Image (cartoon, rainbow, N blue to C red):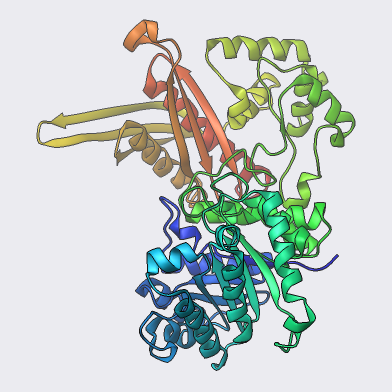
Length: 540
């Protein structure tokens, strides 16, 4: 199958998503991670539009990219001035990126009602801008046809004229953009086929020296960005634009974490190596971490729940043959198979989890019926183990007499102070023991009682396990009242999701006291992390 080139625009289009922002250092780190993943083009930003992007390209000059070509973004020159006078075009040339991508208007509605210029003037702007960039020392010039599919459906002749303007100026690649994200896969496939056929005609071939590569750029407003990208590839597109995790304006862009495995594993198109494909989940987590966005568990291929099984019948089947309920091997994208345990579980779930955790039930006088009974009783009290893998592991180890606490709580005290002029102030003191040795009293402040407890526990543990907990931080904190009829005396469930550089885990606590429930979840989170480190011999 023909190789497909991957064009990542996380650093530009991705930052237009709500709540998404990257510092200059963030963008450098992500660019390096994308290069490691094997992305062919990394669109770094718009050097002519803001200082941050200009500084990014300045810093990027010191990076040696092994797999990627850095790309600078911009637009056709402004109406009323020449391409040579346009500051944005000159900023692209001066920034040092080897590839330039500029966009222009393809939909006559935008030309006449938004830009309010003549259709012929827009064609001149496209032609002149591409031609000017081609006279510089850039390795490639790409043209993104903004709103192409909407424009094609309303005025096909003019939409094709805009592409022809770029082609006659010597453009190397054209991206067909579904900017509003409303096109359907069958429309995209049909239109892309027609466009490629139009420029494959003998009379068109005579007007240029080399074939034009066509690409696809889609948005997810109809939840079809990935499907539309795949449809375009089926029609002949050889460059696919998208962002990691689908970040982008409104509903986002096409998600490369889905597109890459579909192209490589489902459609057999070479795009990245097998080795790099295994880095996909880590790249997804890295970008979400850098963006300070909670990873989406249900994200296909790379999400925590992408290969998770809960129903007993399903688990029984995958223990015999994983293909029975999994469409692919999760390890190919750096993910793993997971089995969840809840009151819906059967014996197969318990047997699977015991094997996964390295717990031998036979040696401890335990059987699956007793464990299931215990789980169902705890879930009746408010625990929910299918969303708390860290606490479940600790519970299983305790039942099997295999739990080795890395610390024990002696006591803690939390105080909250409030006066009319200041917000609440929280302070926590804690006393823990490690290997039966009391570590003394440690105190810390926090923005709330749980934050103060977290800080105090970290401070105490850091004396025994220096720096090992630095990468751990809270991703999500949820409190749910289990039965509101008891009012303020009701039992509450606290769910904490934590993460480090490589993994995410969840822990849970249940109590009538929200601080006690929070402590249970917080303590389990640190116990889980320290146990992993001890198993890996990272701590002694």
